[in-house]
Amino acid sequence: MGTAVAQAGPNTFAYEVTITNQTLAEAFTPLLAVTHSSAIQLFTPGEAASAPLAEMAEGGDIGPLRALAEGAPDLVAGTEATSGLLTPGKSVTLRVATRPGFDRLSLVGMLIPTNDTFLGVNSIELPQTPGEVTIMAVAYDSGSEPNDELCANIPGPACGGVGSSPNAGGEGFVYVSNGIHGIGDLEANKYDWRNPVAAVVIRRVGR
Image (tube, rainbow, N blue to C red; front, side, top):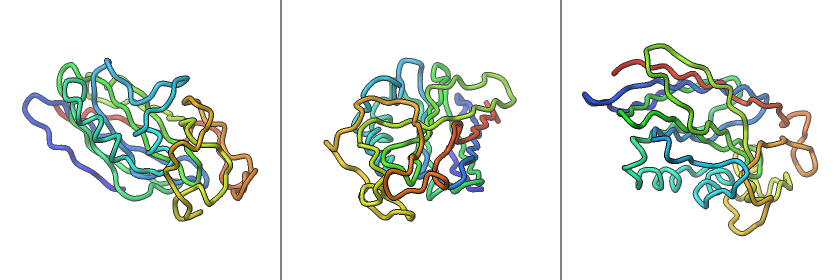
């Protein structure tokens, strides 16, 4: 288990967030956690993905999305991220901090090998008292790249292909992913999944 730590001040609330990969053969790229107000969402199912979200979903790069979040201090309390791949059956814990008025948590990270699928926890209300809640997180498709399942278009150790592919087309909107179908280079009996793909345990651990 790895840990990324956020520093909490006297007017902040601290939480530990533990993510467990429940898939058979999909890995999660670095995960980005954002604490924010209810006025924003990192993505909206049924609507087009932002360019930073699409870049994360296609190539695993959380940098642009993190920069976008951190550029909105009136809406975002803070960001934290894991490092490396979270492989099947493994867990990682990060520590996030927030402050009054910023009571939501969002969490995203790409699933590999896929074309543009990501783990998404979308604006979950953080527990306001000590204790924990468990969220069963599903995988979403960003709709920004065709799901050809060809390794040439999929990054990561299983395929080694190209990640981000701007203007490649796709479904045009974020939707709940329907998995791997074995139409390209990926075997469905190995890489397919049924949602949820992860358990996310959120614990309030301090003021």
